[in-house]
Length: 138
Length: 245
View: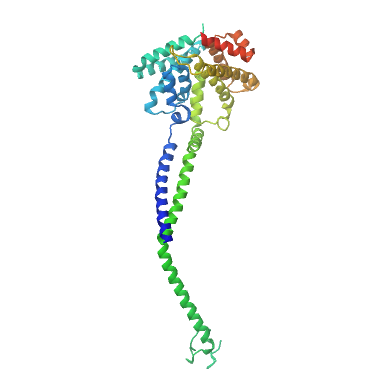
């Protein structure tokens, strides 16, 4: 009788462990192929929150890591591009003042490309443009 | 031993003499005992086989249970350390592709794009403190400080007209700290910077930091020196005035 109980209990435990193992394998596989940008450094939710709050400098600062060539999920591409736009706009002034003509040219090309990729966000890009103007201390 | 009848040499376990055919009476008791023991052993073996076959499903189940426990432990260990595994893999890849990566790093530095340089180093998990990238140690170190300064001034100064400012006090604090940290580190490492292979880039960072402070915080050379020599309160008061603007 005791043997039967032990057998049935071990069968139940095995079934539970098998489920846990499958869930664990799926989770581990997911973690092993995680996106650096999404999970490690930048939080898309934060970028979207600061975009809504029009804190474009923070959006730009949070987006810095994408400039190293990191791959991002398609669904988050737009918010990272917005951050990249704000960041390049901020740095454009620095390159201009420092006389980095080639870098300035690359910067302008990238800014134009981002604007062209997201025509629906032109009003936000315009706001970013004017926020940089206002950030400059005369 | 010898046969009691013919005296031939026979084995202790022989029941009859192979030469004269007479019974081996000397070891008859012993042989009877041996037979008994053999029967007992056979009985015990049969019992054991029956017992094993009866408990086999339970034994197999227990083996599966142990295997599952080990499997679950390994999987969760991998899951918990996935970041480190990936990180190590990236670092190894950066060593294997060092020639290709170095060309890209050089391009970022030549462009004066130190944020891109930092992002590239971070993304590829390039360890500037070990071969084959150890020559980049100081330029990466200073780029970190430059990156903080740029990010904090950016966060502090760039807002839309209807911006909901999250925490101006925090922005002022971060901005003040990163400005002081960058210029302090530049002064502290001056002799190392002068001897470094990438000194021109580090000096360019300094120039760009000066430009950031001039354009976005209104500090010319004199004002910057005054700011850096000022007290914490004085520095914060200067930055807070910019918020009111």
